[in-house]
Image 1 (cartoon, one colour):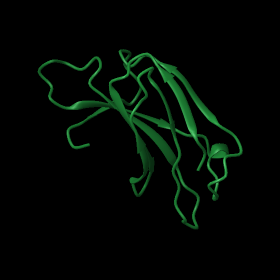
Image 2 (tube, helix red, strand yellow):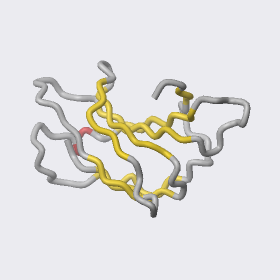
Image 3 (tube, helix red, strand yellow):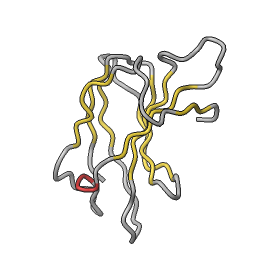
Length: 110
């Protein structure tokens, strides 16, 4: 799978790459002090993967809610390969985690 790079405005989060359908964790990372991260992951599977990057954060959550916010973004298939060689980087860009994202969820067990 491709490497992912992002510069984020908030550095209190964790990142997980998963394959949807199986929800198998392919990789995880924590940000650098400046909020940036690079993550790669993969599997030796034969079938095409529906890969997502998930951000788990306390940023912007209600004080009464003990669970973390989960932001789930789909990685375009053109960035997913069957080898560990990076051919093209996927740049998540800058994300303000205080914003509400479409289909955002919460997770108490991550």
